[in-house]
Length: 135
Image (cartoon, rainbow, N blue to C red; front, side):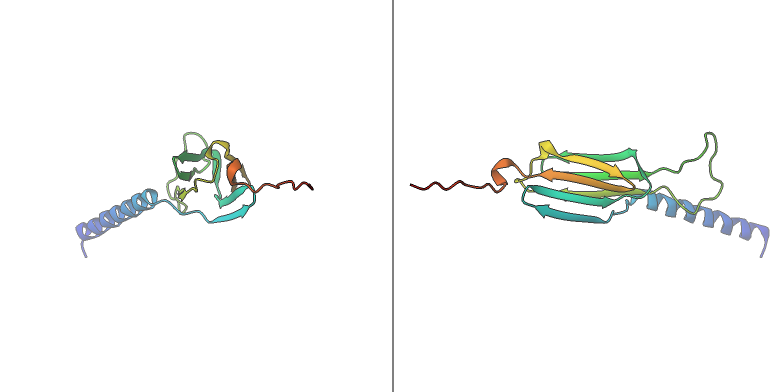
C-alpha cells in the first residue's frame, strides 16, 4: 500500500468520525422519566445527569411540556480537547398535557441531576369534600 492510499483512508476515517459526531449532536437523548399522579396533580421526575441549571430549558406551549438540556464539559478556559470519548450530549423530551392540568402553576427543581416538575390540577379537576348537613 502506498502513502496516497493510507492518506485517503485516514481522510475517510476523519470524515466518518465528523459525520458520526454530527449525528450524535443532532439526535437528542431521551431522558428516563417517572410520572406519578395524585389527587392534586402530576409529578414528573426526569434523569438529566450532567445537565446544569443554565443548560436546562423547561417550556410549556399550549398543551405541550418540553424538557431540553445539554451536557457541557467543564474545561479550563482556552483549552479544547484533542481527543474525547464523551461527546456533548443533548436531552429532549416532549409531553402532551391534559386540559385538567394548570399550566400556569408549574414548578420545577433540578437537584443532583434529577429534574422534579410539579404540575397541579386545576381547581375544578381536584376532588373536593362536600359537607353533608342533617336536616
